[in-house]
Image (cartoon, helix red, strand yellow):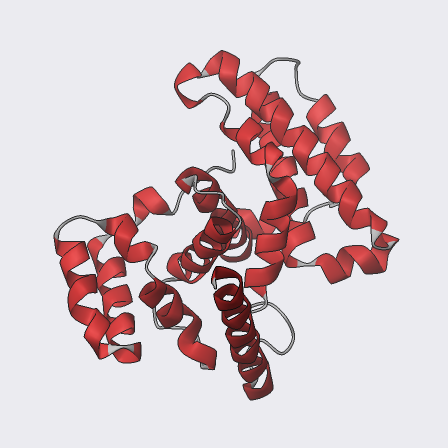
Length: 244
């Protein structure tokens, strides 16, 4: 079952690499970042503006930090801007590209059939109200969200812009199904997938926003990095105007 896997698996070495990346971008922020790590204030470190700037590289190449942090830090920041503060939801959203792009099992699943009909049939093939159906629904819903957020061009080319809405509707319904079964089977983790399904459009927008740093055709070109940097400056300018 596709579930949050990044936040709880971060090790000290991962976070030390983030502190080192922060020090390269802003030497004055290195000491507060190291202090936050030493005091165990991990989320203060991960959620800091300095961490975001370091990971995004201020228009340069991405920071030399683990892939998990390259996705988690900007996704977490983007969701906070959308008033979604649930760490598990940020973790889950960042887990999707890390799992489906980098792990052997994730790549195998991602290369499989990706039609909504095939996914719906795969869910229906599992016994009703079973662990298997919950896992299959979570997997298929996560796949649909990942495709819609990270590779929207492929979906639009296949069926038009309306197909994005179809993928998100399917993802929301599948994750709600997964949540209802998980609630019956494991009460201590109830409603997680149902919470995810509530924010499906925001999560898709966040994935589409963040993937521009890594997955678009100009992601690693000088022009692409400059354009992203200028976009961030414009966004920061808009934020200051609204605050004023």
